[in-house]
Image 1 (spheres, rainbow, N blue to C red):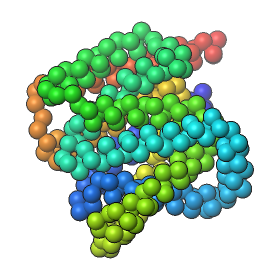
Image 2 (spheres, rainbow, N blue to C red; image 1 turned 90 degrees about the horizontal axis):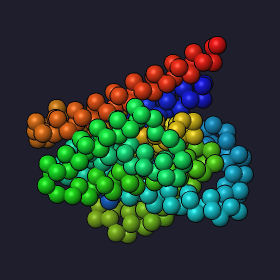
Image 3 (cartoon, rainbow, N blue to C red; image 1 turned 90 degrees about the vertical axis):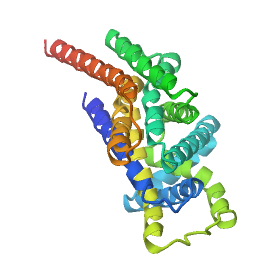
Image 4 (spheres, one colour; image 1 turned 180 degrees about the vertical axis):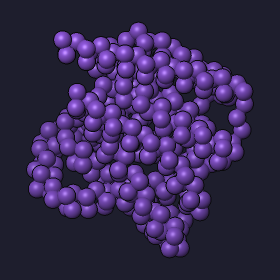
Length: 299
């Protein structure tokens, strides 16, 4: 039970931080989305190396990297995870930078439903009655939002599926969190560096002091929630992890409406209301199950 509680804590911390991140990217309007993505990859990798050295885990890291290299399936899985998270980052940054924070939040509202789908197919996790009701409500809300938009929300779909598949891989690959994240960023880093050095219109770190510092900080704000997410994925079911994620898009939606003043209709309010009702039902169902298990163990 202690491990489950740790997983819940790590999950909430990760999604709260991800919900706040749009504010960070809004501070960099002068940097293109592709440049932000590349800086995010480079500085995340350097931050992880620094973290490993400071925490004195270098020897464990090297030993685990050697094992990963010899296990081809594990190495392939980490490479796939690297590609998926890069796609997710770029789509998210592009959506926020182009003033579509609401669409970005929709992507993460879709994500738990994709988590449920993947968990039931690949992990054989069972969905409770409460969970089924919650999923139906959330799916209805997402479907209504899609209909209201009048177009297929490609960015939202890309974000939802790329991150759900990324999380599925993270749950299945048995490596330390810092090892997995460091390898992921290392795999894609050469491409990011080549772009920044030879193809970026601005040149490498050629902005003023404040934007340069923010770009360096992008590595920190990227790596920390991913570390929390990886720890959470190891400790709790993928379905529960998915529903915790609703913290993230809810924060993003609040920022989009009240801070960035993006348009918000009554139809959207009703749709999101159905999603939030689903969250409440799912939460109640899990609390009810937890109390029953606790009473059974005390008997």
